[in-house]
Image (cartoon, rainbow, N blue to C red):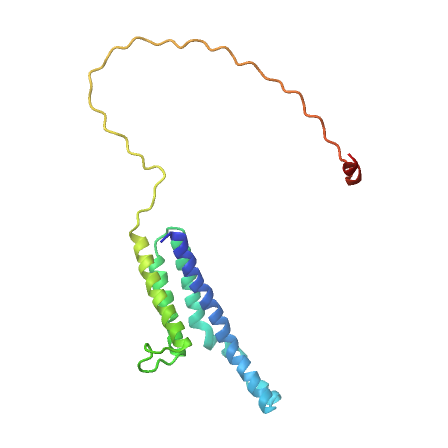
Length: 192
């Protein structure tokens, strides 16, 4: 697979985890406000909320995973070392998303949409890990890597001096200037 395609796929994982982090931060607050509205207890609910702790405690691992996947994508695209380490950190930080879905015994025989989605994304993550690992072994193309053939030792040959003939200077071609085009209104142009 091309390096840019692999970097783009890893960046898609980073984007998905960034959206997951935003959702994880906002989902509890949305559900909390909906429960207040249903119970008609909005004023008492707002007074008891620790707003700082609410956002930090729920979206941290996904945000870390998004950052690690982004760094891995940048390393792969830039042909720099460290892509595998960043990718493994992203997989480890994103692992808690497997606990969001409860896998029932025998789920692979008839998976639900959530089970299939999480299992497919996990399998895709492992396949991308293999692709990143294989890119590590691919040689980096070098611009100035030119090999010169070995020159065998030969007897020096006396050569007659070569005198280059004089070349007459080329004639200078002068082109007449193009006539300046003037603006013609649309009505006049239609009449012509």
